[in-house]
Length: 529
Image 1 (cartoon, rainbow, N blue to C red):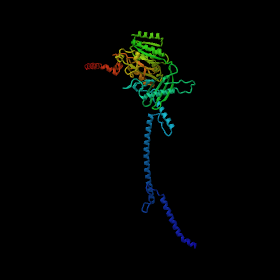
Image 2: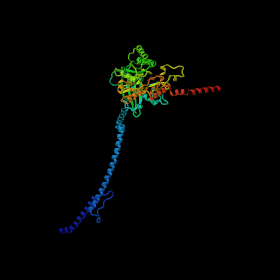
Image 3: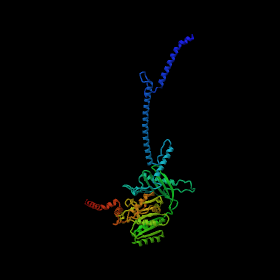
Image 4: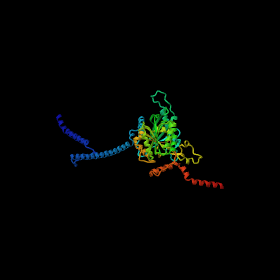
């Protein structure tokens, strides 16, 4: 019975197994068949190609899709490479332009790091500016001049139409700027050094002697301030720098000038009366007030030589002054040759040379400026002197011309800053010898001083160029000789024209006849009325 039932059930069981296997095959094919981008790929039908050909077509289609995708990826990689190269070139350009500032990233989420980066950038401005050493310059016009100041006055080169060569700092920004710098320097001097146990001296603004400053437009402003030291010939010098931000102290050093000798070298031919006037000034300022000075006179020819030697010897006896040298040359006058011979004649230790002329008036304060602004192997000093106009023109409307001391005032009506002149200069003898001295092929008047100035500009020495209140060029009638070259003669005539008077004063002379005619007519018209 059981066997019969099993035999009857067996066909049903086989049919069920066949159906189950077919169903599983269909499910497997549906699950494993690859899909397209948007729809499921159909199974091969009865009238379609065979199953093998169908799968080959599917595989070929997928291969084309992968190939297109690879091409797209390659294009994107090429674009990214080009963009990366552009950013790299831009970064290199910034490195060349700002080599010290690439690490400056102001992350505001980390204030301490941002402050450190900002300070690093500001210090890099000090390194890029002409603070620690000079830079080579192409021409004499490329030098950035300093301007000088005291507690009361500013002495400036760029006067323009409204500014004066000497004036109180009227503009609030300039006044506040200089006050801030002086106060910061005083605070720095009074800051304890932590070494000395003695009670420190308290510095005040009254100890300030003078300062110079200049601005490099793309870096900042450099200040050099001089204060009185602890002894008569000692000074304190503070160097500050404003890198378009807070002022930073660069140096704080003691400067002892007690043993610093200046050798004043004067080339001369004839002009005995002018030499007498020069020696009056030299005796008072150089011998009596300063005392650390030597005079070298290089005399050309023999005419009036005995008079000059007599003036020198009389001064030596009356002032008990033995520090002078007289050199006589039997040749045509050459300023460059005279200064060169005088500088090389010195046989002592390294000395500050002051190249001077017989028509120059200087003060004891200027001699200190000469020392403070020179440093062997580092600095040379090219002061801009104040040139006096013709006193007969300036004081022509007065009853009499005042004394020389009263004439030496720095005003727009009395003279001008001689910013085109480079003849008066202070430098150490070692720097003058190393630079090669003067061009001895230049004869007569003019040219030799500019040539030497360019030599210093082309070196790594720092050239200090600033107007000084204690150096004057006294007016004298200028003779432009026919023996001069056309270029020298032109320079001589330009200098002669500028020495006579201001534009307004010369204008009054040019239009004198018209002014007198107008005045005469005015008086006649008043009489009629």
